[in-house]
Structures are given as structure tokens and as C-alpha cells.
Amino acid sequence: MRPLPKLSPENEFFWTSGAEGVLRFQHCEGCNRFLHPPGVVCSRCGAAPVVKEVSGRGTVVGVTVNYQPWLPDMEVPYVIGLVAIADDPLVRLTTLIVDAEPGDVVIGMPVSVRFEQHDDVWLPVFAPTGEPASEAVEYPEPRPAPVRPMPTSEKFESRVAITGIGLSEVGRRLGRDPMSLAVDACRVAVADAGLTMADIDGLSTYPGGGAKEGGHSEGGIYPVADALGIAPTWFCGTGETPGQSGAVVNAMLAVAAGLCRHVLCFRTVWETTSIAWGNRQNTGVGGGARISGEMEWRLPYGAMSAGNWIALQASHYFHRYGATREQLGWIPVTARAGAAHNPVAIYQAPMTIDDYLGARMVTTPFGLFDCDVPCDGSTALVVSALETAHDRPHRPVLVEAVGTQMAERMSWDQGTLLHEPMVDGPAAHLWSRTSLKPADVDVALLYDGFSFNALSWLEGLGFCGKGEGAAFVEGGTRIARDGEIPLNPHGGQLSAGRLHGYGFLHEAVTQLRGHGGGRQVDGADVAVASTGGGHPGGTFLFTRG
Image 1: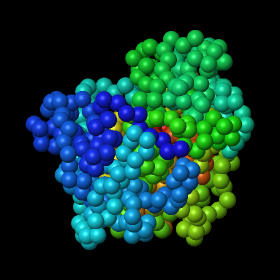
Image 2 (image 1 turned 90 degrees about the vertical axis):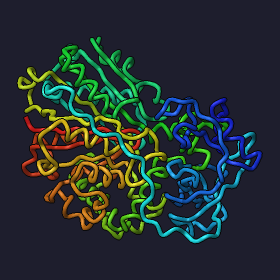
Image 3 (image 1 turned 180 degrees about the vertical axis):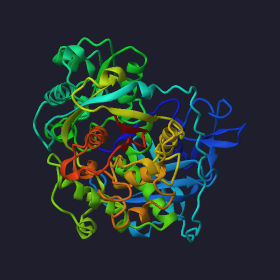
Image 4 (image 1 turned 135 degrees about the horizontal axis):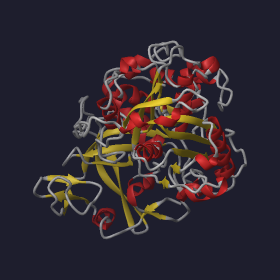
């Protein structure tokens, strides 16, 4: 059944205006701009907005043809579009493009609104007007916030180190309780640091206990503390952080402030088993459930996956910069070459660019191998006070800088069109906290939930210019293990498995310790790692102690 928005006083005007055949948005009279999604005040001037009718015309600025059968009442393929409304092109709708062949929908196509009624909701969808597509290459972009300078010359990062890492069994449909995976990873990490559970005085995790049934958590802080017999001085489990690894930044802050000496951070996923056990059916939305919040603006249109949302930016990037799927494909092909030397990677068999191009499409421009591999597994690491780090069994990994700033709106469709959202802010913030430069980095562990994510991070972190990423990765030589900037030598999430960001931190420590085996990057003294992006992102710069 199609997921539909839950009507509220804030959004009802939008979802029901189709009954009159019109499209309405909030409008700030003082700033003379439209606002979306609806809110209580204008973020610029603080005034209460009014509701105003618009022309119903717009332009397609992002498009993806979805081939994944997410919903039983939506026959594939169908076209998801990102439409900039004519009355204010910085206001966009994720929607369906109807009355057109999938291959005919292009960026720059003029469209006008139609309405599909579902119960008490009128979904605005758009159809081509028949006018020729615009030849414009550049479209309006919101201006990101400037990076703030360091408020003090002292860095909390200089007071902490990573002293232990741990990884549970990793695989698909392991059929194990996620708590057992978390316990295994935590025990390995604590032992790796040369500590006991009695030494651990802090616990930190993402996203906390609420996501267990969806396969994204082992249950959170409380059951893990109970299972391991830990009585933490400080603990934190939350999803509102700069990337999934924001839990690690929280741990570093707690240690740097003197609240803890050794914080155990952990992250568990068990999506494949959770689905097999019937906890969710592909979408994570129960049948007949009404939805609210940010998901109400995408899920009713069958845009069920982050792959659909990010594909809209990828399509715009391809349009503006002339990038191709074959260029993008060198990211997953290179990842697979690294995974061949990673004994715990999910997929290790060789893959060629022809294999990549021949795989089934998921949501254009993403094929099967552009998408990361859901799996079961848990990752853990220990953040310790620097003064204790040199007494540990392994050479410590030091933290040179973190990047956490939110420079864009927290939105998948109201911000940039040129890259995955929430990448540039953390990247710029990272470099503002160190004298090191991109040229000093020896290995990059960059989030690759989809191949375009890693491309966005390469550009955002300055390894190549804006719009140059596709040409930069083409052929794979620059991002190979012996290349200019080795990218995800363990296989990343595209081949090693979706450990949801923490696999990159584990690999960063492994590389800086020199423990990478056949995938080891020679002379790895500086590593950059990113997690998330889109909603939101975070970065780390690590050095060998």
C-alpha cells in the first residue's frame, strides 16, 4: 500500500490543495520567497509565513528512472523527478513525472502539475508541457554557510587517540541476534586496546536503541552495558550527529573534557537477517502507515531509498559536467580489487568495468554495483586519553582533526544539486582545524553507500576540483592502492559490506598500524575518513602515532 502523509495543521494546506486543482506553498512576504517544507517561521527574518497559490509550472532539475519494485501498487519502471517550481526555483519537489516515456524525461524539461488522489491526500505530480527542454547547464543553488574559524587555538582532538578496534563476524543473513555481534566486536576492541571491561568508563553508539527492529541497531547503550558488565561514567546513544561516526566525536569530547579515560564506541547492523525474520519488508514502512516528518515528502512517490534521492543529484551532476556511468564505474571496480585482499569482505571475486556496465539497473544512473551491500556485522573502537595511549599494545592512532559543521539545510532535495548533500560543510570544517592539506593524505576511506557518495567526498575534500571527480577516477589508476590517493583499499561498503560508516574507521586504524596485509598502502601515515553525507556527514583526519 502506498505510504501517505499524515495530515496536520502545518501540512494540510499542501496535501489537500489538489482538491481545488491548485498547488500552494508557504510564502514569506517580508523576504518575498517561498518556503518548503512548511514551517512555523521564515528562517531568514523570523516572520510567520502565509499560504500562497503558485502557477503549477516547473522545470525538471533532477531525474531518476526507478527499476526497484518497492511498492506493490507502483509498476516499474517509474520516473522520479526533482522539480524546481517556476515561481521560486530554489523551492523543489521530489515527485513523479507522468505521461512521458522514462527515456524522454530530461533535465531542463518544462512540466506542469497534475494531482493524484489517494484517500484524503492529493499528491502533486508533474507532466511535460510539450515545450522544448531548456538548454541551460547551470541552475540556481542555495549558498552554503561559511566555515567558522576555530574558537580557540586548543584542539580537543590532540587529547585523544584510538587505541583499540574490533570487528564481529560479517556476512549476509547470519541469523544471529545483533546483540551477540555487538558483544563480539566490543570484546575484540577492548582486548585489542589491552584493557578490560573494568577500564571502560564510557559508552557511545549510533543511532541508539530505537532502530533495532529495522536492522540498524543491536538495542542501544543499556543492553550493551548490561551484557558487558559496564557501569559507565558517561554514555550517549543518538542518531542526530554529524554522520554515523558522530558518536565517536562525542566520545572524543567526553575524553578530552576529562569525563572519561576510555570510551567504547560501537555500531551494529543486521539488515539482512532483520528482513529475513520479517521485521520489515523492503521499505521499512508498515502497511497502511501514515508518515510524517521528512519522509512524507518522498515516500508517497515511491522514492523509498537513499539511492533514489542521491540519484537525483547524480543526474544533475552528469548533466552539468558531462560525466558518464563508465567513469563512475571505476569506483566500484577499484573497490572490488581491494576487497580481493580483504578476507572478511562480502564480495571478493574480480569485477571488470564490463561487469559493472552489464549489471541490472536499480535507479538511474545507479546500477547494482553502484549500491553498497547490506550485511550483518558490528564494529567497535576504543577512544582513550592520549596520556594512556602509549601504554597500549599497539601504536596509537592520533586524531589530527574532525569535520562536523552543518553548512547546508538538512534536506535531501532543497539544497545542492551538484553533489551528495551535507558533504562540503564537514569537509571544509576538517581542513580549517589542521595545517595539513589534501596532498598530505596517504589513504582515503570515504563513505560509499553509493558510488556517487565517494565521488562527492573526493571533490568535497579537495582531492580534485568541482566537476572533475568523474575524470579523476576514470581508469582507476589515481584511486588504486598505489595511486595518487588510494580509495577504500578494503573494498568499502560497495564490496566489503555496509557497516554503515564504521568500517571506514576500522580500516583507517588498520592502515595506519600497517596491518592491511595484501591491501596495505605503503607509507600510510595520514588517513582521512568520512561517514554519511546526505543526512548528515562527518570527517576525520587520523595520523600514525
